[in-house]
Amino acid sequence: AQSVTQPDIHITVSEGASLELRCNYSYGATPYLFWYVQSPGQGLQLLLKYFSGDTLVQGIKGFEAEFKRSQSSFNLRKPSVHWSDAAEYFCAVGEQAGTALIFGKGTTLSVSS
Amino acid sequence: GAVVSQHPSRVICKSGTSVKIECRSLDFQATTMFWYRQFPKQSLMLMATSNEGSKATYEQGVEKDKFLINHASLTLSTLTVTSAHPEDSSFYICSARAPQSNYGYTFGSGTRLTVV
View 1: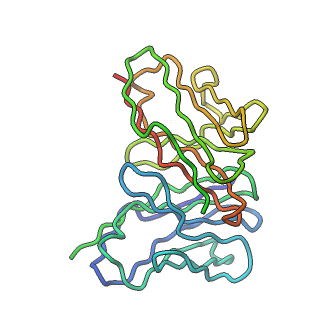
View 2: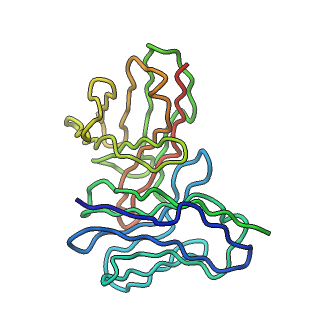
C-alpha cells in the first residue's frame, strides 16, 4: 500500500533563510505527488503538484519541489522564508488520477524573526 | 479557479443529535468527492469516497451507519454524523478534483464539529 513519510514533525527557520521540507513516499509506480499548506482551523491550499514531466515543479508563493525517483522523495523548498509561511505543510500521494490522496503526518513550520 | 464550499465552518451539537455537513463544488461538477477527518495536530485520514448517484465507499474502521454520506448531485455531497458523541468531535474536510485545475484536488475550508 502506498504511504507518505514526513520525517520532520516541527521545523523552525529564521525569516529570510532557506527552507526544505522532506517527503518520502512508498509506491510501486510513478505516483501523483502534492504539497499542501494548512493554516490553523483552515482547509488546505495546494502549493504544487507533480504528475509527470519535468521533475522540478514550481508552485505558488515561491515554493518549488523536486521529484527524485531514485530516492522516492518529493522535497519542498523555498529560498527565502517569510513570517507568513508559518503553517502546517502536508505532502500527499495519489495512486492514480481519481483516487483519494494519502497524506503524510505533516510538518509544522515556525518562522523566527 | 476551482472552489469547494463547505458549510458550516463550525458547529456545536449536543450528544445524541445529528449534524449535517455540506460540501459543494461551485464552478465544476464533481462526480467524486472525498471526506477526511483530522484530529488536532494530526494528519488527514480518509473516511470515505463519495460517488454521485451511488453508495459511498468507506475506509476500514469507519462506521457507515454513523457517518452517512449522500452524493445526490454532481455539485453536492453531504456528511451526516448521526447520534453524535464527544469522541466524534473533530475537523472534517471534503475534497474534490476539478478539471479546470488540471485535476488538482481542491479542499473545502473544513468543519469544526464539537459535541458536548
